[in-house]
Figure 1: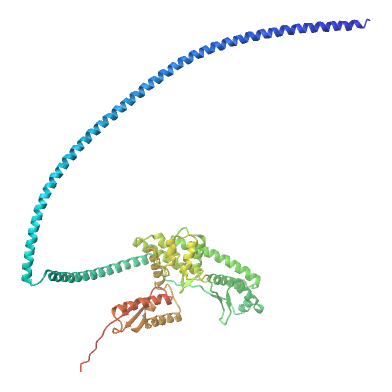
Figure 2 (figure 1 turned 30 degrees about the vertical axis):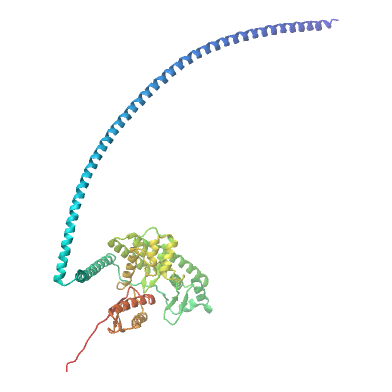
Length: 520
């Protein structure tokens, strides 16, 4: 029993605590509800008050907007009224101006009508006078026919014949005078332009050519170059792509190749082999490889130098390389790289004198023999090959035409193409520029004379001035003046088609009549 008392006390305390908690909770909830109702009522009052204020504010704002709209409408209406008044005034002025114009046109129309009446009256008087004059002319014509014993048609025909004959004589005289003056003026200007250009681009008359003879210190070196059973010389020829000729010429070996670049590489490599003294296939291949690199550098430098000296910029690197290759290409002993530079400078000088495009003329002249760098590798003429190369690497059509037409293989399309041809001829024809062997010279002279003798009516043919002029003496009974001109043109055409020669060839046909009598 004593143990139940604490339990009972605890239960009683717990019940009391629960009752007290419930009471406090009840009171707290009631207080919260009362506070919430009071707060809600306060918010409702504030909302009603705020709504009343907003409605009052909206009414005031609406009145202000209505007033502003009415004011703007009044201003706009005033502007429209002013503009309409202005337009109305302009229309009134335009209407008055049109009325004045109408009055003026009516007055002018009246004047024109009066003038037309006077003109009609005057025309009538003129018609009367014309009829009277015609009648008088007819009477005069009848009287003249009676006096001259000729009809009007016969007299008119006679007068026309006399006038025609006189006009023909005057016309022939004027044509001869104009032709003579034009020829003298043209020759004078041509001589001035060409001599001025040649003077401005004067250069030394030096003829360079590719040397293919390699000197050696002694004939003993020939055996070392040939090698055992020809091993060394075969290795050299295979690596360089040339023919090495070892003959009885003392202390010299000849390098032969159609390609001037290969010949130059072989010459350099062979000279180094002779100086080095170690001659075997491995050393041969090494020195030829070194010589190729040296020649490539020289080709590039020569191409850049040519473009710089000629004043031509913007060339493709491959074109510059081909221009540099012309350093080792010769024509009648003339270095084609130097010839290209000289032709470019001449073309620029001539173009500046005649008012042509200097840059185009210089560019076309510098590249005119571009095809000679590879004409031994590609079929076709060097002019056609050069034009195709220039076209492939982006040169303008006018430049390509100047290259292709400098030997008249195609039609020249510009004055610059003609200038390129002239510059090429001047550079190749100047004294000392080119040379040829005696055999070639004699063969060319004979061919010229044979071409001249092959035409009917030609009695004698003479090649003069080292083959730069050919004179044909024709029989006057078989060839008249017109046929002499035809023969000169045909001979020149056949020479162009069948021969190769430096510069140009002048063709002169001589026709003369001689009568001989003897006094006995």
